[in-house]
Image (cartoon, rainbow, N blue to C red; front, top):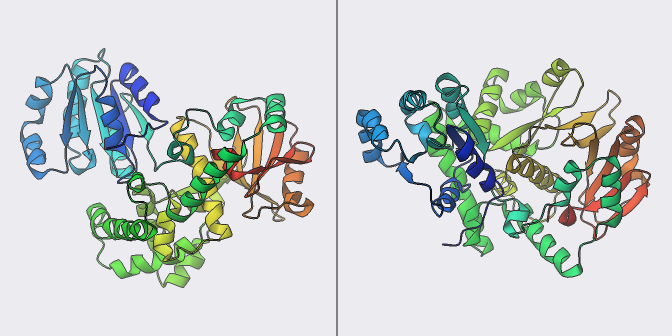
Length: 418
């Protein structure tokens, strides 16, 4: 089987050298177990337990403390640990018996809330948390280089200007990048597609994946008695991707209560289906209170929910670009948040992120078109004019970087993420 190195792998390897417990979370089929296969190539002694196996679950439920003690000199890997959360009590006991020892446990889980909740209760201060999402475009291309997005985050004001003024991608590479981005926009980035190349096979797999989390993962999470109401919710919720989400309005359209809608959204977040993009305010309280936007981690899954695998869609392109930003931030172990900006008069930037240093800001606008004009950057101009240490970038489907105004550029998505 082909093993594609993930951008997160070096951070996980480093954590195993410096932390007592490492936890790797992410959606089902995102490549967590495959990433561990990379670790198997090292000299580190590993002991792997697949908790999806009923026999292994039963043995560990009865004998976890003895089993773990027997292999205390190895790194013990517990895959799908959320299926037996009580094992974390034994993890805590063994870790506390040898607090100086690093790399004692590697926990893998596909349920965000269950894993986080039990870690907070049992392993507070003992664990490093990472999130592994489906492939980013640069991983599919197997590029060892930093993307332009990552370079911009690491740069300061003047270095960003120099990067954008001098960046160039050769024609052949541009075509490879564009093809990878188009496929990401159509089918998403699940590792399964390294082997499933035919469009119909990919669509069938995504539809089956969708049914799996409805019929299996969701039912493991909660006792959902009326699956039909959830299916109505997810269709109407998916249609609002990238828009300000009015919970009361969505509840009315679904014929459900606002509390039920909030609970359904929390299930989606727990299963790594969607993520929340909050508006940016210097005041954290305002950031938490104002309406948010939601995006899917994977555009292929979004299409499966909507039942729409047609090519062009501005909202779908925006979801793909925002997901790429999110994946790269997670893969860097970055602490900075991704937000959007919107004034009371409706002046909006689709995305906003601070540099690694925190002293520099980048405002993004996302348009599927291959062309750009002055009208398309009018909101960026207002944000850049109001923030001295900032630049504005319009991400589109073009074929070259264009400087539109002072500190404002148009950048092809294929150049930003390839």
